[in-house]
Image (cartoon, rainbow, N blue to C red):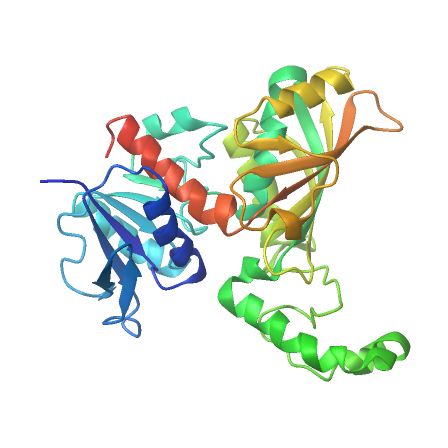
Length: 344
């Protein structure tokens, strides 16, 4: 029998990219199964030159004969159904936060810590948060040369980080506020009240919202704590100091992070640029922006400059498509890695 891959959450924003990437990349599989909620079951989705009927996640024996299950259906469903997929014989690659900090589940960025998949004890590999993901590539490149000890990271996260609903809410707000330019300039509070916001913490169109996620500790959000905790796990640096701030910005797709990274060794700017330029999946450019890098597989890094006060620190600006490398692409790359190493 050939290898079968299941896409769980196939009708969602990340699920759409997973389907597209399975076609575009040279993934070694023979059949696919599309899985979603009961509401989406029965839909027919185009896949290459054929159509595939979506099956319900609650369907009995849904993971029978599945070798790799790519989950992008939310943490609750992953906690409930990922173990069922493993029990049925599949290896799970999970895109939610459900398993990331489980000590028995590797948290993997394929260019950064691929060997972590060899220590998989629950049959599950976790995909990092999309913001953490983008930062990991330049940080790993620099860590290997200078020895990373800490970072101050401020993210500028797209509406798409909240899924299709997040993008829809932003785009729905724009026409109403665009029609009121004087109000935007003279009474922003009144302008903000012209539209509703349910997904984002405040009106996002023509705005910047310094909060996303749920309350975690000491005034930090869980999104900010993910940036600290996941970075430590992926890089294998449990004592890494991280000062995170996560901000939602009116961008459809593509997260950006301003990083001030500190190292044990003094930083040479030419060596730093060379290390990042040579790192797989990372591209150095002068002025990376989320708009211009939306839809691209690579992570971009620019504005690379020495710190003005500390010769052991470096400042840079990193951008990555949160729905591609930040989610779907790394998920598929993990599947490719599992196949390559004979794990799945």
